[in-house]
Amino acid sequence: MFIYKLLGFVLILFVGCKLSSRFQYYAKFTFFLLGTAISALIFPYPSLLFYPIRDYRIGLLSAWGFRKTVNLLGLKYEVRGIENLDRNEGGVIVVAPHQSGIDLAVTAYLWPIIGRGVVIIKRLLLYAFPFGIGVWLCGTLFIDRNNKEGALSLLKMQLEAIQKRFNKIVIFPEGTRSQDGTILPFKKGAFHLAIDSQSMVQPVVVSRYHFLSSKEKRFGEGKIIISILPAIQCKGMTKDDVSDLTNSTKLLMDKHFAEISKETKAYS
Image (cartoon, rainbow, N blue to C red):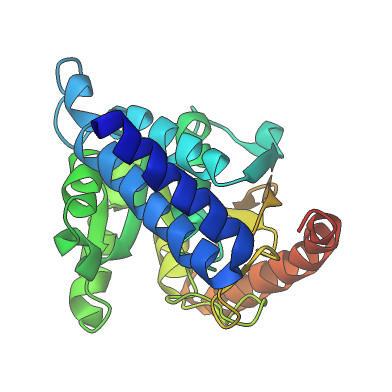
């Protein structure tokens, strides 16, 4: 009896997605939330048998689950520029744009290849059960953007981790998601951290999500290019260089965003 109910439910979802783009939009996001919740809640625990709590390697199984979830939604990812990564020598501030909640998949694709990854996200997500627990276990840092002093203090605590343990700090510098298909102005926290630690900024550009529109309630199939650009060396820079570093990084990413977004438009 259960099998028949399950098959009936799957059939309803299939037909509903074919008949209504709005139904498909909500059904896909529901599937995405369920898939990521399972990956975040269940997948980290086997890794605890081998690695300590808050170790980045605990997130490897969850990242695999996140990747499989978005693949089942009809999304194909291509990662370019892996040769621009240096897993072993020196810490890096990885900056990437923020378009949607499914940006989690971008982190999932970066996780196995960047080395000692640490993601910095807004504190509110710590209380998003079960996602918050799962990402906390793998060392994610949560900042309160309304508390600038506290946020800066937390970032400064990472200086030693960047300099001595070669951590790769992943930050979404826009602070909020873009709704119009552009990269929003960057906040300067990531670039302060890069200069304070005398490390590098690694720009990661993600093509526009042509397949997704919250306004039109559309969630189709598509291709996403994740392009890892060459790292920008910050040794010798001072506080006076923060604005120039922020602006030049933004201009570089804007140009590359436009280029790869043209490529992926045909897939949506």
